[in-house]
Length: 101
Image 1: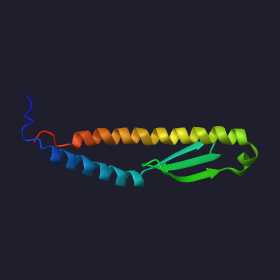
Image 2 (image 1 turned 90 degrees about the vertical axis):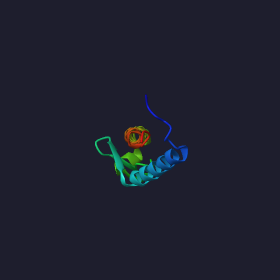
Image 3 (image 1 turned 135 degrees about the vertical axis):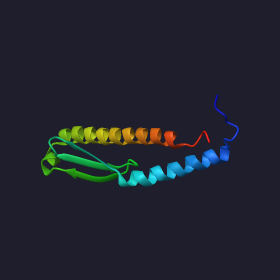
């Protein structure tokens, strides 16, 4: 059976806060990019889900419906990429918590 006597809530919260700050800092440096329509739309976000770049081919400016479809697809794709990264980072953080000293 595990011994929880040495587990201090303040120590645990300190570890969690430190890991959250580290994850946020690392998130800014990670870039997720999606290209749709053969590269007619290219959207990039960082690991904190902030849009950092958007390129739209000039030919789409005359085709609002295609622009809308490709842009929505690109947004959904990069958000999914960032979410998967966040889940992976969370699992790594949980493994890094020093619960059992």
